[in-house]
Length: 214
Image (cartoon, rainbow, N blue to C red):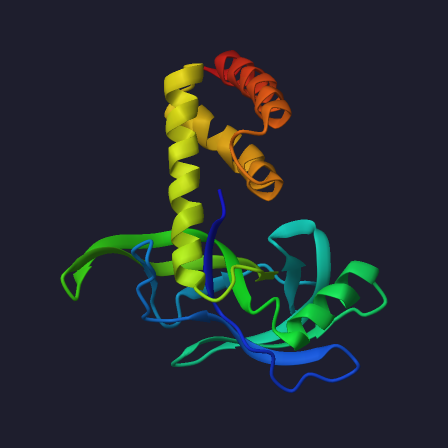
C-alpha cells in the first residue's frame, strides 16, 4: 500500500505554459502523524520513459496532470514541473495552484526501510529508504499537517470499524480502507449510507478472495 506525506507548497516561477517549481516533500520534519523522511530517502523512483516523475491530482493515478524533473537536496524533494494545459482538469488545477487554493503537495511512496526513533521527546516513524511513485497536488488548506493527521486518524478508525463490525482481518480491512476511504472522504463523511453499503459488498468480495487464497 502506498504511503503519502504532505507539505505546504507555493508555486514558484509559474508561467502561461504550465511550468512551476517547488518542494513536494520536506526532509527532517516530523509531521503531526509522527512521520519523518530522512534526506536522500528516495533511493528508487518510478519514472516515465523520459526519466521524469509523474504528477497527479489527489493521488489519483487516473488523473495525471503532467510530469517533473526532480532532485533531493538538503531541504527536500525539489520539483521543476510542467502541467499539461491541454488536459482540461489539469488546466483547472493549475489555475487553482497559481491563485493559492491548491497550496499543498503530497508524495506517494512505498517504504523500503523505516525505524521507530525518539526525536525531540516524541516517538516517530523515520522513513530511511523509500520508492517514490508520484507527487500530487492536494487541497488540505491552511493547516496541512493537522489535516494530514486527520486523514491518517480517520483511515485507522475506519479500518478498526471494518474489523469490529464486519469481521474482517487486519489485512482485509486495510485493503478495503485503501480502496474505499478516499471516496467516502470526498463524499463528506462516513455516514454516506449508499457508499457504506457498497463498501460492505466490496468487503465481502475481498473477504471471499482472501479466504480463497488462504
